[in-house]
Amino acid sequence: MSTSGFLPTSTALAEATPDSLSELFSRDPEWLANHPEDLDKIIAALRLQRERLMAAEAAGIKAPRPAKISEPIRPLPPGKELLV
Amino acid sequence: MDLPVPGPEANTNTNQSFSPLLPTLQTTIDSTSLGEFKTCPRKYYYRVVLGFVPRAASPHLLFGQYVHSALERYDRARANGLSHTDALRAAVLEAMTLSWHGDRPWWSGHPTKNRLTLIRTVVWYLDRFGEDDSLQTLLLASSESPAVELSFQFSVQKLAVTGEPIFFCGHIDKIALFNTEPYIVDRKTTSITLSTSFFSQFSPDNQFSLYTLAGKIAYETPVRGIICDGIQVAATFSRFERQMIPRSEAQIEEWLSDTFMWLDLMGQMAESNRWPMNDKACHHYGGCPYRPVCSRAPSARQTWLEADYIHSIWDPTRIRGDV
Image (cartoon, rainbow over all chains, first blue to last red):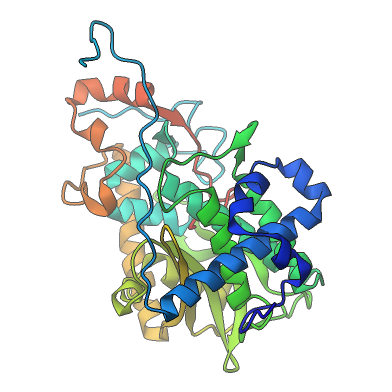
């Protein structure tokens, strides 16, 4: 796979997609310290993300706006009821 | 109004940057402390003299610290002879470790400053400025070791009100050659576009002037100023720009002369334990974290401080600042 303009990412690039990041990000640091191949997959996935972004920019496609992060659910204060 | 003098839980006996003779007087000063004092003496009093910080850490502050530490890890690994690939792995692991809180990933609740954008920023930055960086790290004349992660402390021929010498201190990421001339290298994360106006905020700038002076005095290197790597972090991308921020000899002399006047003022306030508010700075950078305290009646402020803030000593002789 071509990585034009960027450092080679070896076979990890072929295996990793941005979608796999959430799974890789759930690994605790101790696991990652003992599994450098997972670190390589994270690096490769992020490089792939950049390549996709650059390709989209080159094609004149704007990056989508990120979804708004919702507030964590909090209990209602005492005496308040949820109106439905 | 009488303000509380710091007790044993704050600076006395624990913060080495303060005078043993006058507990409100800082005698070893970094750019963060000086910057807080210049911004607002009351803010400096709460943050540095008393050592109070908001209970909830700012995602911006944490993000900046994590990026800085990860890139520092890379620099150190490279200085120790590791390849770019191995040093990059070490930097990513550092960022993943720092952003692992207890038994779960860091959840910042922020669309641009979160764990994913952190790791992405580290990887993309090091792909841009890692292996093929045009900056050449300087070797220290004293030890022949690479000039990375340097902690400095030097006297400036200035005595405090107690007669003790005043020292400047801080931490420099790197000293590197750019077109054969030495510069201090510093990185700044931001959410705003890396335009001319972003870089113009550093001339004049307290931290960059002190660092240039430190390069000249503490490392006996004729540094010309700062190479600033601007790191823009957005939800879907990270971008980088590098710019030179020069400082002439005359500018540094003027900065030092002005700083001596600020230090005199700091000494007067420490002696009287009176720290006036600069109420024109309350709204800077999204609002001062101590505004909720200052907006209360004077008699209620201590209660608010103790309820909504925690103790975190700012001792620049021990910790890294200026991220």
